[in-house]
Amino acid sequence: MECPHLNSNVSCPSDSSRFPNGTPSSWCCNVCRSNKSPWICLTCLMVHCGRYVNGHAKKHFEESQVLGITQKKSEKQEKEKSHHSVCMDCSSYSVFCYRCDDFVVNDTKLGQVQKVREHLQSATGLRNLGNTCFMNAILQSLSNIEQFSCYFKELPAVALRSGKTAGRRMYHTRSQGDSSVSLVEEFRKTLCSLWQGSQTAFSPDSLFYAIWKIMPSFRGYQQQDAHEFMRYLLDHLHRELQYSRNGASHPVSPQDGVRLSSAEGKCCINGTASVVTSIFGGILQNEVNCLICGTESRKFDPFLDLSLDIPSQFRQKRSKDQDPGPTCTLRDCLRSFTDLEELDETELYYCHKCKKRQKSTKKFWIQKLPKVLCLHLKRFHWTAFLRNKVDTYVEFPLKGLDMRGYLLEPENSLSENCLYDLVAVVVHHGSGVGSGHYTAYGSHEGRWYHFNDSTVTLTNEDTVRKAKAYILFYVERTEQVASDKTATNSTATNQPAVDTAATDSVSLEVVAQDMAAADTVLMDVAASHTNALDVAAPDNAALENEGEDMA
Image (cartoon, rainbow, N blue to C red; front, side, top):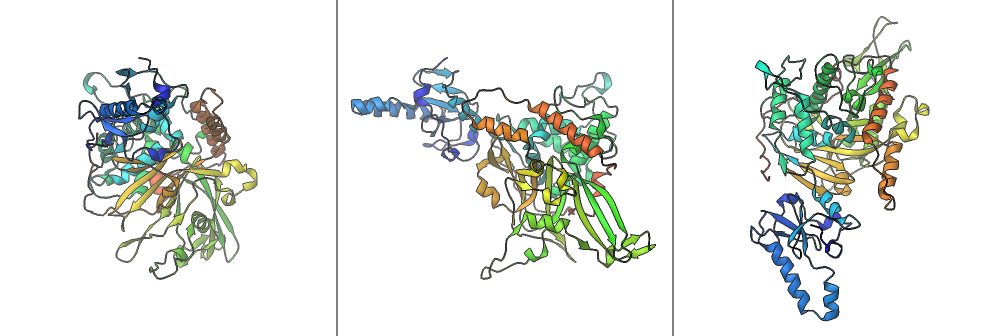
């Protein structure tokens, strides 16, 4: 029914801190502390249980009515403007008015009910299946990269075959030759479940099963390295999408979705591009100079992420009584990565002019920046007997990371295309890669969330800044994004939303064509960066506590 009381009963706070912490469907009644059937008053934002539990939501309305009657006439008239009669179900997000004694279908003129509903429809957590926090943190981070996740979410569900193969999916995984499992399909279903707001936590057991079959090194329940998992995941997603483009029955892209140009052939892993290489793919130029004869060698290296050392001067552990010293910044790590370096005796370069290995210098330049810049901080280092963690805090910007100074030809790039904004952070808690715990921070529609397995909570930028980042995901700032933000901030306009799918399509084609100009073929992702990656060795660890089933 259409409720006439919304305008006087609904308030939409601009400060999100007024809402309770935690996932809405798990909020507790302010009176009896029950988390069954929570309802939130849209006037004062207090949470009470529904009428089929202890009925404190209705009692809250009735008490406000009694209070209004005992007031003086002038005060009563003022009180009638906020009767606490409208509340929202924190699980289904339906709205009920106690004065009308019916469910409500309309909204205020300013759309305040929908704003509250959008606030409550937050992200869904991922249940821990037994030390799978490394997987959960990566999945939540990738889900917040809109251009990447939208591509998969818009893919059509896989059709089923008939006859003897009924029930088997139509995908083929080239690396395993197993047509009964599709990593792309399970990844798609997981992403679709994360932002529906219909459940507190989702169990990614089907995806985990597919990972076990396709990536044997991740079988079992021991703790794994999140960065290594991310690299293998992106590699196998790319391989399956690549294979489908070369003859499998899976459609390349959803209708009106992100489309990849035919010019991408030279810029992908193993010869054919995919959404993975189009979004995460960049190109490095590796310059090596012989110190004896001066011969210069140049090589183009593709990358999906950059692994950055934390400079040694920032790794020293200091006691509480000592001065903390200078703060390490992300720029220090990037500068260390691109600075001229003299190769030591174990890395002598074979000079084709001298016909033998000689002392030489090496320097990296970024020739092509990706749409999504993934920066991996090397926090784990092998010693003679064990693997140590570098626990140094690295300061990183949330907005406006300028990569122009690390480009090979910065004069040929627009300054706006070199700016990146943070969209997700993976954090490792603990002392070793074979133990500890992974969580993630992600930005979604202007709000930051903390993803801790099945628990998802709203957080703020200051908390994100203080995190000891392990993997950082930055998204290229575009003119389209800037114009979208301007349109969003303007309350006077009611223009239709921008067709992001079409925008993504154009941007991906431009990236692919630019990258194709670099006449190089990418090698296998998992193997090509062995010397640059901080690869984790799977160690046995005590099982972490599974996320509590809050659904």
